[in-house]
Image (cartoon, rainbow, N blue to C red; front, top):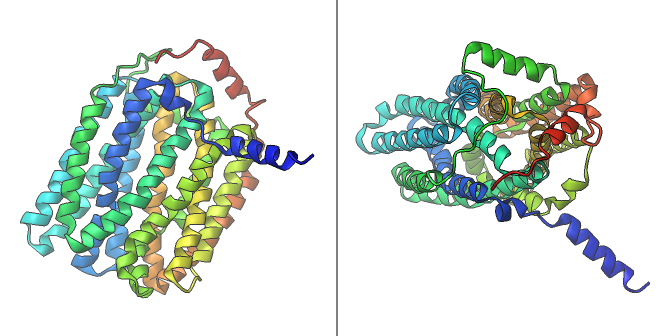
Length: 436
């Protein structure tokens, strides 16, 4: 009897322990993961530098929020088209060429900061932000489609958690370092570091082996895009993942408020902490994500996690100091990470390879356009009632929208990986081991 608590604790720790088998088993996943990791640190510095530079140039909530808005149209168009070409062309080549293009956008930002006079920098920031969003959207579906093929289906949840851990560790280190660098050395230095990260990333990407597709190859066209959208619409479980995530991000994502919130809390040098807080929570959630492998009702898990994300943001708006605000943002980030793990499992365990690129394009839109629109929403609400008002109202609207989506999509709410027809069919198609 005396060993029972120790045995229970050991069992609990084993259930929480992160599954690292994707990194052990697949060389190409390691290369793709390393490339994303390197790129991410540079890109996160740029993520801090662009709104900071815009705030310096304009001092306007709306001008900063519009950075996200101008990225929306390129994200939508290129995300959908990126999915179509991912199902028609060499996915590896698409990833490499997109990375080259993204590197060139950072070169433009550097030249803009160094060479152009201050008033002329504003339109260039908007144009380059739109270009960067479009190129990222072209790359995303092909990269995700490759990852789906170089791993076993049972490893997809673990892979998403590993990616999430790295991404959110970057959200701690990258924005914190980015905030310090941009405040002390200026935006140009941040853009220079981003360029270096892209060059290193490309050295890893060119070593990834081409991955042959299975099934029919659909030529990229408007018709193929429509076919992909129709497939998604016929799947309420997929539509639930997209709509819940978009609603959560549009209403509760508020990074555009952070430069102003740091000033109001009398902690301008702690700007990086606000950007990093969500990543801290997400890292903790990722590092203890082993338990997610034992959850099968993924739809219910997505709904619960998205609602907790909104609750964390709403509570952050009423905290009296920057440390309590950061703590609540960390809680929200943890909830969002868990929601992302379960969305990723549904996507990658149920979608056939012939639709993988196009559906990855829709997935990218669901988790990328939401933050952009969220920043624009946050800026307009803050202009009307201030940063805290925008943060709190956004969190409450998020909770209400998630509840409405859950009520409207009962099949998504009841999704169970053990009995879902699409999950069972895809598992049967993938019984042949993946070559790594």
